[in-house]
Amino acid sequence: MTKLAILGASGHGKVLANVAEKLGYTVSFFDDAYPSKATLEHWSIDGTFDDLLELDRKEYQVAVAIGDNAVRKQKLETLSELGFKLPVLIDSSATVSQYASLKSGTVVFPGAVINAFAKVGKGGIVNSGAIVEHDCEVLDYCHLSPNSALAGNVYVGSGSWVGMGSQVRQGISIGDNTVIGAGSVVVKDIPSYVTAFGAPATVVCNS
Image (cartoon, helix red, strand yellow):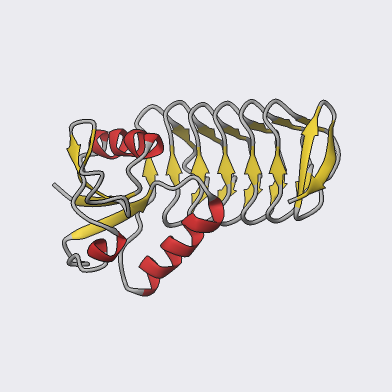
């Protein structure tokens, strides 16, 4: 079995571990709360991020279970620079087109759909039940929350977060490091570095 070290012993980490085990990985957790936090459900936590960095790069692959896009980016970039393999993990219940493109460190959770010629960049989270329709482009380190839906030809800039249950109309562009609030309906382009919310979604503040 391939060994997978998971950084981040949280609820998100639990779901990621479940995805990985279904794919045949054996998992180990690492979290900076160690040693005060030594277990996560039935899994042991084996050390901190610094301890993870000492693992054999040929023996272990690594996944980062951190929801914050900026923190996840920083950890994944450090791991990549040090030569760790950052696999794409796709839950067995997800539907991913053979014509879709997913880059390293991205995780696709149960029930998600990624359709033909969609692209998801590095370190992305396509969460439970999320839909990425044909020809979408989701750049690096984005988080598509549970049951969010991107219609065809949507562009999502790097580091952006699309909230739970949000819907984005076809052809829309969302900028970098932008937050779309839960339950929003996005029918016009949203710029970078803002938070937008509502139906229709409007900018409410700078991020």
